Length: 543
Image (cartoon, rainbow, N blue to C red; front, side, top):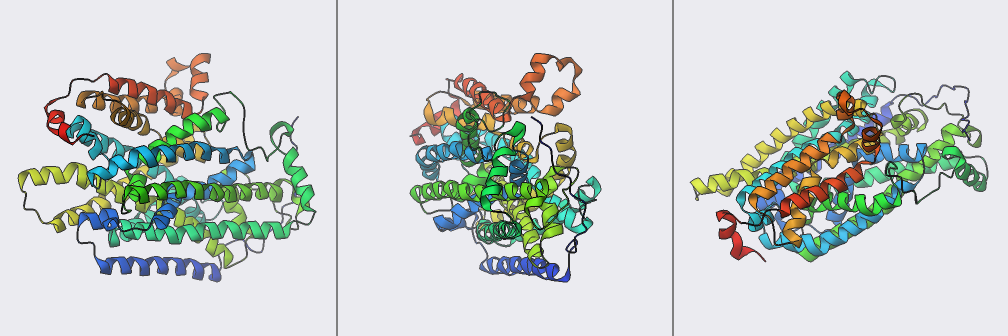
C-alpha cells in the first residue's frame, strides 16, 4: 500500500536565516574552543607519551565520552535522524554488535595492547610477525583513516556550508569545498595545541553541545504538537514503508540487502565494531590514554553503553521530524517539507523553525561533531606515523635523539594529515553522489575499507599461532582490494560486471561484504607458518 504524504501549503518562516543572536552563540562556541586550546598549549606536552597518550592519565569517564563523540560524529547528527525519517528505529539495533565487539576488545585486545606500552596498537603485530608487518598495518590504518575520516569531515561540512551559503546552495560542490577548507584549518590549529588531551577534553565539551542541541529540538517539536500523544504513536505505527510501523526496532529479515537486519547487526556490526575500536588507532588510542588495561576496558564498555541512548535521541528527532513534515496537521507549525536530498531534513528544520539564539546552539553542535572527527583522526595518524614509521628509523641511526624532536615532528605530521584529510573530504563529495547511498551507509561503508585486512591480521595474531610477515602483508592488500572492488562505483564503471547475479551481490549491505572480507583475509594470513628472522628475534617477547 502506497503512503500518501501530506503536501502542506508553503508558509514562509520568520525564523529562516541566521540572526545576530545566532552568531553570538556560534562565536561563543569558537571562543570556548580557543580558551581550552590555549590552556593545553600552556601545559606543553614534553614527550610523545604526553602528546599522543595524555601521559596515560586520562579518566575513563572522559575517554568514554570521547569515544562516543568521535565514533558518532556529524554523520549521527545529520543522517541518523534521516534514517528514522525515511524508515524506522532498526539502526538502534546495531548497538547489539557494538556491545559484543566491546566485550571482545575489553578482554582480549586491550590486555595485549597494554603489554607493549607503545603509543601504537600495531606493535603487537611486530611482536608476532616482525617489524615489516607492523609498518604495513600502520600504513593500512593511515590510508583507511583518511578514507573514513574524510567521509566524516565531508558530512560535517554540509551544515557548515548551509550556514554560510543557505539551504538552497549549501550542498553545491564548490560551496562544500570552502566549508571543508574552513573545518580543516580550525581542526588542525586546535589539535596542534595540546595533543590527545586537548582532543579528549574538547570531545567532552562538544558531546555536551551535540546532545543539548538534539534535546532542544525534541522539546520544541513536542511543544508544537497539538494532538494527544496517542495519535502521534498511531501515526508512527502506520506511517512506515507499505503501511508498516516506524517504531520497528528489530528487522528479522534474512535478506542480505537490508541495512540493519538482525543477522547483519549481530555478525556484520560486531566485526565493524572490532575493526573500529580494536584495530583502528583512532579510537583504540583513546583507551590507551587510561592508566591500565582495566581502566581502558571500563572506558570502551561505558562508551558503547552511552552510545545507545545517544543514538536513540537522534532517532527520536527523526521520528518527530516525520510528524512535522509528513503529518503537519498534527502540529502548529504548518511547516513545508524540504525538497531534494533528505539528508538536509534536520538542517532544514534548524534553519527554518528553530528560534534565534537556539539555532546558533544547534549549528554549534554540528560544528562540534565535524571538528571531533577531524581532531581525533589527525592526532591518531600522527601517533601511528611517529611510533611505527619515523621513530624506529631515527632511533636505529641515532639513539641519542631528544624526545622533543619527536613531539615537533609529530606536530608536523598532524598538519600534513590534516591537509590530506581535507583533500579526501573533497573527493567524498563526488564519491557519495556516484554511490547513490544514504549518508550513513556511505560513511560506514567507506570506514570499513581498511578493516577487512586489519581484523583478519589481528584475529590471526590473537587467536592462532600461525601467520608470517608475508602472509600479513598479503592479507592487508587482499582486504583492501576486496573492499574497494565491492564499492558501487566499481559496478557502475565496468560494463562487463553487469548481470543479474553480480548486480544482486553489489546490492547486499556492506557489512556482509566486510564479513566475507574478514574470512578471506584471516584465511590468507593463516597460510603463513614459517617465521622470518625478524619474528624469531621478537619471539621471546610473545605471550
